Image (cartoon, rainbow, N blue to C red):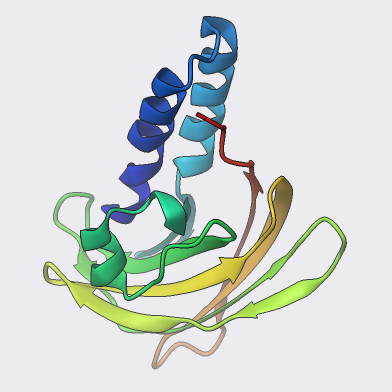
Length: 164
């Protein structure tokens, strides 16, 4: 997924610039790698994937593409609904809704909207969070002609940006 590949290179560049010791750098790089991995749900021949990226780390071009403002307390949630084999997949139209719960147990509805780019349809929204925190997501996907909605649940740690 295009949007999900942003986190690791940005995190590694920030760590290298900040003089973090090598073992801490390796631990943080491993965490960044795990956090950027999309959550996935296979339902029949349809694959739903979701990823999270700090909006402050987005390039201006990516921020503009997805129509989000860059902020230290905001994360971009990117959801794709696809059919077909990896590398030859096509977007599937859907209604996507999402919400997130923080460690205090407070729920936040995430306004999702459709974004068309590079021949794909993705669904994007932003969630506010003050790091460090852990967010538990519930993403509901409804497709026309399918009675039961699909529910993707996953959680991600949101770490405070390292000082440089």
